[in-house]
Length: 613
Image (tube, rainbow, N blue to C red; front, side, top):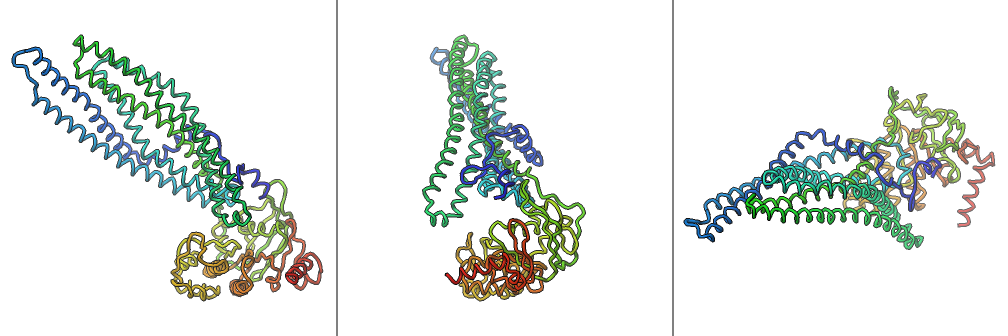
């Protein structure tokens, strides 16, 4: 990894990205999350109204039940006193019970509307957020992905967004209902007894005083929990994709040890966060029970003094129990919000990453000939330059091979040409146009690429080849496969071109994968080609097939070939020999052999190794 990458990407276990311990701007992240809800204001208003009506019907219920109990109690009491004509008014009781049933039916109906609307709002909001994240990732420079583990990026895109979705869909409705319930219960309690209401409301500031420091403390732990989860995902992803290498080198024990360390940190952060979250509920219940005891005692006294009825005190006690529940819910939701905002901030950090700067007035080449020029190019990932004053001229339609030891700067040269990174000094031109004056999409469409590490996705072989050209016809796909020498092996498969490759394309060989990527590049039919170690990991027979396919691919195209096997690039028009970021030799194979320099030594050593083998 370059110095720049090392400096810009803090690392944890196994090279994983380490997140921040706590949100840097809690209020800012919260306001920004609310902005995603702004387009759905109408739906939120309906949710709020449904919550108000549903909660109102639920809140009125205990008062009606209290009246029912009062009717029953008064009738029974008068009969016990021997009052003439005393009886329980059952028609009145039946009427009140029907009213109660109606209230709860309507309450359930409005709660259904609330949940239905909020589910749609939450999923649409998260849909927009995912769209923004995915679009953002396509605009990020290669350096962003080089500086972070794939697991951490995946954690932001999946786990963190799922956390936001869950909170919006569940906790938002709970919070609205809890808020409306608190207001409604206070109104009903004041209607029954202002004195008892004061006693009940005293528990609110007491509860806030108790839970406020706990919520503040939990914020750090919930943020740490999200960070550790990202690290754990990063480690699992790395170990899973490289499980063959792990087993081959007998590193299972070390892998498990690293996993255990990260898992232990996640456990510790999660335990602390959940412990604080779990402590809040018992504390709220304790405070609520104290209030409940005081209300029961004073309420009993008021009933004996005939200040309020037995039904009113029963209803008030019910309200008291219900009163503590939404407060406890609110406190619990506050903890969930801590975790959600921590997750949201991690997503917003990704959205705020510096993008590739678009060209304001791009120049467009109507037809790319393929004349390439490196003019006094200097580049480095950090303060130390990797290459300095590189000057190369490559004529259209020629093949240029780039050779040299590992770390010489071969791939860096290609990265600069593709503008994955920008040069520090100098310029690179194609047909006389500075590539910094071209749209990146136009520049990269001018190149077909075949890399050492083949990339195929889950889908049919035909779809994988068609990835090289939008709206490619079947005939074009078949011609490209034949030109790439891939048609023969495809036809031997049970389903031919409709054969489905699995996620890692492990159901075909490495050489067959490479032939498919060459077919993809053939289909793209770009005026310039880049071949990076395309035959380094295949057998000799497959190498011959691939070499034939590549010769067909490079015909009449400006081509750049990175190769370690020097025997494969003897026919190149120009060979650039690189070492420590500099072009130390340049010429054809014959010219370089006659110079008897670095290239000749490298070439002869390879043949000596083959003879020994």
